[in-house]
Length: 317
Image (tube, rainbow, N blue to C red):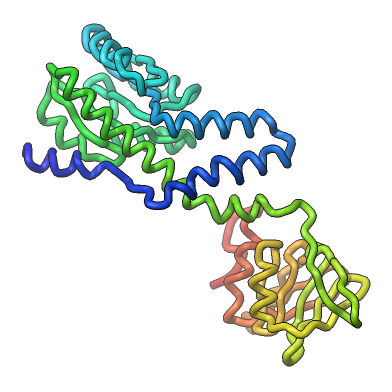
């Protein structure tokens, strides 16, 4: 049992190999997006969060109904320079209330103080759309060690505990929390890059000896014509020498989907999806023109019905 506990407790660290990219997200993308949208407070909060991360500080919630244990843990936390803030709760309802109003990186949790398991507490947090901190079980009962290996659990410490035992558990929990934050930032980078694009992007096209700039939002559809593509706007169109695949990749961030091996449409212009008796689909755009959707690209229509009202399947399999 002891070997098993030590092995699992040591798996907590999530490495961020490209930490520089995480700092880039803090320093460039998030503040730029916030400032562009006018949310100066959001931008300031981003810098504050980045500074806190680099200082490797943490916020801790103690959940224990024993005053002596609460005091002992509070004394340990007070002596650590990396603990930015800590608070205490006596039971699960009080803990959930505090987690709803404040954010914590680590929970020091006595199992018997709860009427639910660690996994059930995690489920409660997710149902309320709350972040799940790293959990360290602090318990007087060895049988609770098995429960310490539930998801989001970093370690467990048996009572009576020493300052060193709690300190080592907090170190592991801090590494886990920072690693998860780094991983989430890396996952979010592609979307942040899209959001940081200019609010009014323009496409440069060369036609009849001139270079014109058009807004991709004004393009209704793009159709392949041999080695050329036809960019169709409501008022005019442009024939350009380029492959449809290259154009599809460049216009994807601006809401264009491929519905045919030779056609793209701007989803902002789509008014209706038609399902025919043959099982095939068609799109009707503003102005009344219709485009056929081939079977191989039907899955791309899912993005059009992502936000919907009503029950049942919107697109048949």
